[in-house]
Length: 287
Image 1: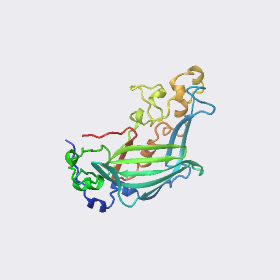
Image 2 (image 1 turned 135 degrees about the vertical axis):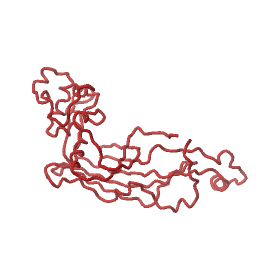
Image 3 (image 1 turned 180 degrees about the vertical axis):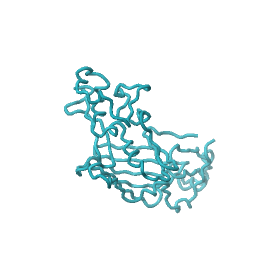
Image 4 (image 1 turned 90 degrees about the horizontal axis):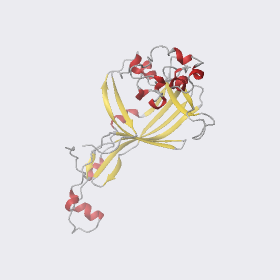
């Protein structure tokens, strides 16, 4: 059965905004590696079209970009709840503006983005009644009838993010938060070879591996990774196609970037953390 929604009343308008776990983000955050000014704690991987390529030329060629970076994130709480009017369903979200600026270690700009996080707070049931009919329609003699009880909507998510990027791109993600005790857990060795978290996707051939032959990312890269004759011996092979990713100076992070976070916090005493998982495919209500 769907959860019971509280009924909307004018008193709701006077309630302070609820930002949930997002309130902890207020302020400016910078990722900085105090022990090494030549290695940032941020790292990204991006597959880009090779110079001179388009959809009709040099099929399958790509440029692989992997860099250390520094990042500055500023979060600002928006005063007051943001009202979303959905007829029978009314929601008051806590909004948090953010601005993201990323540079390489020489100070050159890599990425700029601004947007909004929303804490998707309680949804109130706002049914039709005599007062709302009078305000919206102007005929007090009409009866509320079936509209007195609107349909219940229970969203499957608690957080949303919208972002704008100067390339002309926008993004909308929806997701959930969860509170966890202790330190975030990351895999080690061959278990880290998980296609869901690699910069080498299954569509790229996964460097010729199978479920039974993963690459141990806590050991040196396999010998074929640094074999200059591979392209001549197997020009169309999956290993050749992804060789540059595994041969990168930032290996194994070039293959699985989140291992940088694993290694950065390995000696830190973390008592708890909040995990926010978001996806562009999250849609629709749930019971």
